[in-house]
Amino acid sequence: MTNARQIAFMALRDVHKGAYADVAVDRVLQKVKLPDSDRRLATELIYGSVRRQRTLDALIDQLATKKSQQQPPELRTILHIGLYQLRFHERIPASAAVNTTVELAKQNGFSGLTGFVNGLLRQYLRLVDNCVEPLKLPDNPVERLGILHSFPDWIIQMWLDQIGVVETEKLCEWMNQTPTIDLRINPLRTNLEEVEAALTSAGILVRRIPHLPQALRLISSPGPIQNLPGFSEGWWVVQDSSAQLVSHFLDPQQGEVVIDVCAAPGGKTTHIAELIQDNGKIWACDRTASRLRKLQANAKRLNLHSIQICTGDSRNLPQFYNTADRVLLDAPCSGLGTLHRHADARWRQTPQTIQELSLLQQQLISHTSNFIKQDGVLVYATCTLHPVENENVISLFLAENPGWQIEPPQNGTPDSIYSAPQGWLKLWPHLHDMDGFFMVRLRKTNDSG
Image (cartoon, rainbow, N blue to C red; front, side, top):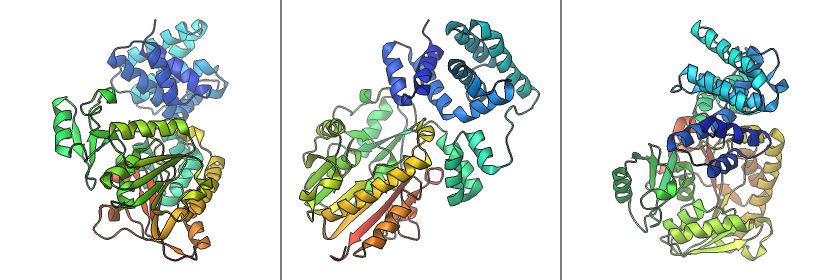
């Protein structure tokens, strides 16, 4: 029997063997035909169990005699699914959560341990019924927040160092929410009012986003994106609001040569084309041909013609030296500003991968700054909140390239509300209700750079 929980178990089994969560979700959902409500439940159980893995493991550690890591891996997964429903899913009755988890154990080779599964889940409920918190937390703020909100200690420490305990807790809560979907309206094909009306009449709740003239946020669950009105007509593209801010911050002008050096899958490239009224030349560079094909498909759907494709590593494209009015370096990064969208990223990244990414970012900015003409502009952007990938990269670049300086946003522009004293922008999700982002605009002032 294939139901939402069995589907979730199959996907989580793959994730624990190393599969990316979103790939595992797509793979299992493609194999079966489930009603929408079951698809939604399966998806939530998968992403929720991955996201809350540390909390769920801590509960197993405290409720069972054997620690979570000593349990058979598939049994641990089944316990995650059961405990996730009891602790984090308000709409599922406790009895249903317990019974279906026991059934899941039976179906997947643990018939002899159904008593253990039943006992552990009922022990959790007994504690809750007696107003005892089953999750015991240490006093140390790093571990306490890490276990309570399910993040590795090093990420908690990195946030604590920047914003302190109170704000870090708010950020953790924000990062554990189900992500929303933002659209960017294509002003060359339509306008905000027309898309708003079409979506509303299709029963989708939307709201506008302050300071972003092309953005609409979907408030209700939209179902498959390509079925929404205006998709095939190229009226809009999915893009988070903070990513939309990057292209506005670049401020491209008609007739200019703009190079997007890490362009795929193309959200910002196509936005630049819209902002210059499709009048100018945009080079979209990326190492990965398959991801550039996605960019081309998007540009075609949006009916944009100013984009040229260049497959290659931007650290080795001398043909672009001194050719661009503006360069966008949306650098490969750890994605620590988008952990709500990528349930498993918090477990995949490590301090070691951050150091490796930082080196790549330094190489990219060092090489691609050569693409800029005199008095041109380079915008460096990432969707991470780690200073090693952001502030440190820029400080190092400026120390080595005296011919460049930070150009802060002008007062009164949409960007200026996110500006730090140093002149760069840092978007904190819990404060600004959008993905975490860092961006800085650098101007080439003389040839000594």
